[in-house]
Image (cartoon, rainbow, N blue to C red; front, side, top):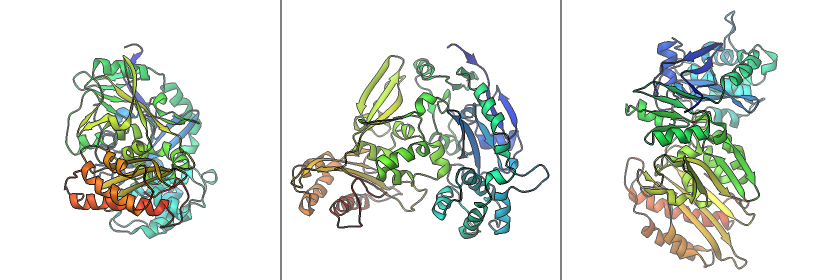
Length: 490
């Protein structure tokens, strides 16, 4: 491996940090609290749900600096190369004056016990930086990933509404005051060389996609980490020792979004947040689904490629992608290969990925005006909850109102995300009506034999899957809420 470095570098608040001795699974939360004594960042759930550990991480996107809230409890230090980490301690002015976001929480009584407050401050600070005069829907979305057990959200929301009037260009702000310095320094740090730290416990940050392929050729059992929204829990909850760990979140080539008349290509490193504007425009139901994946912190870290690569039977995006006919590109040092996404999932815990291969990109065919697409996520809570099941439906009708093409996929109904091939076959060629749907519902029993677990019973899953097919019929025939084509609800 050429052009190799032995240290990662990033900016922490207003200081540049160089680390040449850091474990591959050291979390940002532990580093902040134990090594730097920045204890404003709290540990609550240690799994990315409560938001008490929220910090902002700034990164270069082309020539621009983008700051996003992330969960420090499941973010690994190895993923921070060429970033700017901002904690709650950095917000107050040097004379001790509170930042407007902090002051608003004081003025509107948005804190009681105070444990969760730094996380709320950082989430609202990220919103304050990025959105001029956010509305209530914007505020509620920004706070999806923050939990408070004692204050109640109304005073916090009122504080956010009030501070929206104090814009960044009208007050001192620590990020804006050093923006030029940060941009210049991050460009200098991001040299494109591969970083390797440690021997027994090894951390690798590839400098290019070609270097990533080389690393995996030599270490096919390495753990690839993009957003760590899943792998982070292997460490914080299962206490697993991982080595080597290969961090790919800094590879620009894996974060490209390319739109052509034929369809949309998403690099494997594209986060939910980055993909959202394009997906919501091209496939509105997909956008609404992303709004229900975790909170902003999770969507800012997690990647669609990672959601596919881990093969979880309850991953939210694979059913939608399969229904849309997505294709997957796998890459290794030997080259690339492309396969339909549904063929990637073999059985629980096993995917069609050869040693040394990694997910490089996903291609989603372009939507047609006459298509109907919907995706429904069923969970106990609307926000920040794991799916009991997720169903996606993609339909085209011919001039006579008969089913011309139909793709149905479910997550949570089998050991993998899976198409309902028998149900599709039962309905294709028939008039799109209740009788046809009844045939499809009956055929679902041959497609799936779901399990009972703590999320839902097998009987509930089977009944709900059938009911979702009825819901799709009602929506596409105008018998439910008023909808336009290529819509649906998550």
